[in-house]
Structures are given as C-alpha cells and as structure tokens.
Amino acid sequence: MSSTSIAQPDGNSRALHQPTARKPMNPQVLRAVSEVQSLEAPPPAQLPSSSMSSSPPTPVPQDAPPSQQATSAARRQLRAQQKHRLFPHIEYTSRVSHFDPRSEYRDFRGFFVLFWIGLATMVITAMLRNLKETGYPLSIRQWGLFTENIWELAVSDGAMVASTAISLPLHRLYMNSGGWLRWNKGGMAVQSIFQALWLAYWVSWPFMRDWTWTAQVFFTLHLLAIFMKMHSYAFYNGHLSNTLERLSSLDSPSKARMASTAAAVRYPSSRTRLQEIRQDDEEGEEEEETSEAENEKKEVLNQLREDLAMELTGPMGRVTYPKNLTVANYVDYLLCPTLCYELEYPRTPQRSYLELFYKTLAVFGCIFLMTVTSEAFIIPVLDDSAWRLQSVQGWQEGGLIFAETVSTLLFPFMVIFLLVFLVIFEYVLGAFAEITCFADRHFYADWWNSHDWLEFSREWNIPVHHFFRRHVYSASRPTFSRPVATLITFLLSALAHELVMGCITRKFRGYGFVAMMLQMPIVLVQRSRLMRGRGLLGNVLFWCSMILGLSTMCALYVLV
Image (cartoon, rainbow, N blue to C red; front, side, top):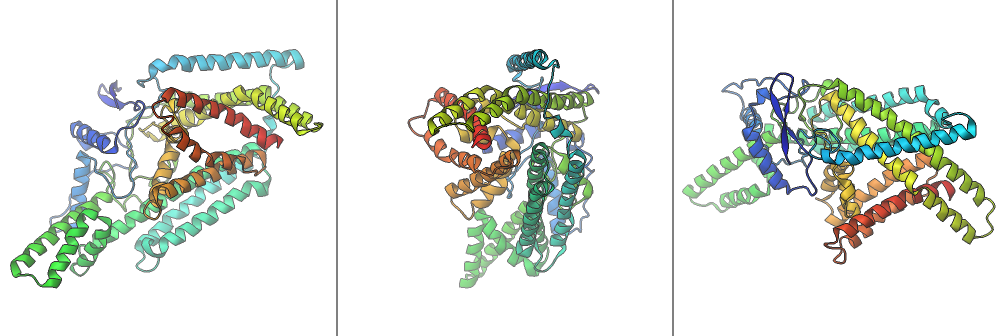
C-alpha cells in the first residue's frame, strides 16, 4: 500500500493510504507494516478521530485492581502498535477508493470519463428517438413506481432501523446478568431468537403492504444491511462481555485458577504450560519445582490478563469496553459505511461538504441513468418478447425468442450493473463516509481484473465480504471443516440474492439461488491445473459469464 501526503487547511499534512494493487498481502506482513507505520506516527493525542470514540486518558490509581492496570497498559500499548486479536478482526485504515482523484489509480480515470461520455451519448440518442416518436424527450413510465408508497416506505424504514436499538439494552442485560442470561449461557440464544423473529417480520412486511417493486427492493436491501450490522454489534459485544468477565475473575484469588483453566482453551500457547503445572501439583514434585511452577503460573496469568485487556481495547487504544455501550456510539455505528462492528474506526480530520454534495448529486444522476436505460433498452425488449411467447408453436421457436432476448439485453444489463456498482460503493457509501468522517474508503478492490468468481466475491463488495468472513466463515470453522464452512457462506449469500430477485419480480423461482451455488464447482474448474497460470483467459471467461449471466437471469425471471 502506498501513501501520499495531503495538505490540510491548517498547513499540516497527513499520510493518505492508497488501495492495494492486485493481490492482498499476507495478513502477518500487513500487521508488521502497520506496526512500523504506527511507530512512525505522531502521538495519539494528535491523531484525528471522531468525537464518538476519543477521550483524554484517565490516570489509573496505583492501588487499582490488576485488571484495570492491565487495561490501561493495553490502551497505551495499542496506541503504539497493532496486535492480533482473539475475535476475527477487521483492520481499518485511512484509504481512498479507486476512482477518487487522490488515488494512485488516477491514470485509470480516462476510461472512467469515457464511460460517462458513452452513457451521455446513449441518453441523448434515447431522448432524440423519444422526441421523434412521442414528441417528448423523455417518457418515464416508471415514475409512478418511485413516488408510490414513498411516505409509508420512509416511516417503515425508520421503524425498522430504530427497532434494532433493542440490541443495546439486551446486551446490557447479558453483561450485568449473573445467571443464565450471560452471553455464553442463554444470552446468545435469546439474541439469535430475537434476530430471527425480527428478520422474518420485516422481510414479510413489504409483501403484506403490497408495495411496488422499487420500494420493496430498496427496503429489502437496507433491511439486509441493517440486519448484518445488528448481528455484528450483538455478537462482537457478546464476545467482549465474556472477555470482561474472565478478566475480572482474575482479580479474585478464588476464581483465578478457574479463569486460567478456562483461558487455556482459548490460548493454545498457554494450554500446555497450564496442564504441566497441574500435573506437577498432582504428582507432588519437590518444593523447588513447585515454586518454579507457581512462578510460571503467575507469568501465564499475567500474560492472560494482558491478552484479555488487549481484547477489550479498541484498535487505536482510545475506547475500552464497556464504555462503548452508549446510544451515541450505536447511532454512529449505524451511519458508518461498514457491516462489522469495532470499538473505534479511523477518522478523517474534517468533512468535505463539497465532496458530499458531489456524491449526493451523483446518486440521483445514476438513478436517472438507470431509469432511462431500462425505459429505452430493457422494458420494450421484455414486453415484446413476452407478447411473442404467448403465440409460439413449439419449444424451438420459444427457445429462439429467449436467446434473442438474452442477446439483446447483454449490453443494457452490463450498463445497469456498472451503474448499480457505482451508486452503491462509490457514491452512497462514500457520502456516508463523509458524513461520519469514516477514513477507510476501501469499499471495493479491482474486481474487474478477477480471474474467477471467488476472487470477484472478495473484491467487488468488501464490506459484505468482511462480514461473511468474520461472522459466518470464521464462526463456522471451529465446528465445521473448511469446505463445509465455505458451503454455508455461499448458501446464505445465495438465499439473500434469491430474496432480492423475488422482491424485484414477485417470483421465487430459485434461478438466482442455483446460479450462486453453481459458482462453487465453477471456481474449482477455474482454479484447476488446466487454468493455472492463464490469468488473461480466466479474466475473459469471468467477464463472459458475468455479462451473459445478468441478462439470462432477467430473462428467466420475467419470461419463464
């Protein structure tokens, strides 16, 4: 990752990290690089951060319990370096997107400009044709779909988001409970039941209200994003509540031995040493050996206390659990363009209101272009094909009409796909990053260079990839093998895609689900010895399957 110095209005400059080129580095190497960079960074008090997640350090009394002293030491240490954490950790840093003018990919912007010129030419051509045929430059039949149910949609969407705040008092209940409602006892089950009921109710809500497909798709996409946010918030804080309980138990001599034994399961490097200590005690070794074992046990407990305190401290050392359990912190997290909860995130020094205006304008511009494209090049083709299929004489004629429809929709759907990508990952997420001063703008990588579908799934939607890797794949690995965990991840992703397609077409045919699940055997072929070392061929096949798959899915759901 490269960095450039960006001048600020106050005359200072800050390092701006650029997106990584091609393949990501080894995580251990990345952590080593971030450690070196953090040692060269200014003191924590000079680093920009959000008011939601920064506060001056509070001195710890000399007679404070060892757990508080360890937590304070962990915060000081994390201000100087990053450390691998127990819970799957997302490493956020200050980065810009590929299409940002400050990116090292700025030489690529010529093709970006050409893309917009091509779209402008297409829109002008459609307007001239409409003017010739109807006397009006634009004929948007879908305008009523955007305005219908708009107020009901706004109220329902606000209620849906607000209802997730129940997770905050629920988590305080899990944390303060001394009985079966502790997170590692019944708390996780209670939270899972609540999330399942919450998801079932809000997914069925648009169907019960009989909304238009535009309102239903927006609500469903936002619903899935908020659900992932709620799940990450609840389960990460649940993990931290268990960690806090174990750390606090080390301050009690009667519970210290029990806490260290429980921690041995979590810390493989300490497990053998603790077992050797117990064996030495049981075998009744000589007094000197017993003394050495006790000293070794104290060292293990001190290391355990340090590791637990490190886990309870934010990546930048400014926020410590449970001080993050506030309404302000939760609202800030809901607005941040990320699906994985952390105690704190890197922030920019200030907002750029001009950049926010540009991104907001671009959102509405992209929606307008998608509407014009569908009105001029997609809806007429589908209407004509549906009418012709009603009078077909045999499957040969029907297959020919279907193939003609797919071929005609290839380019329009490719344009729609690129516009959807830009409006979500470059403009909507970028706008919320400006609002919250969220510094890590790396919402996508160079997915257009992908050699297979697995690489594409990692790079075209990084927030969702981080969520599935952290809360689905990594959560499944302790119980299932790697192939089974991968299968579970693809299965949940396929169900979500099928739900979205069902909201658009009001048909649950399973085409999208099957297409998503077919990616697994396709990836095995793409990564076989036959394709190894043939990157160009892999990229060509990826783009061919991408372009063909989009129009085929549309034709299947609408015409079949």
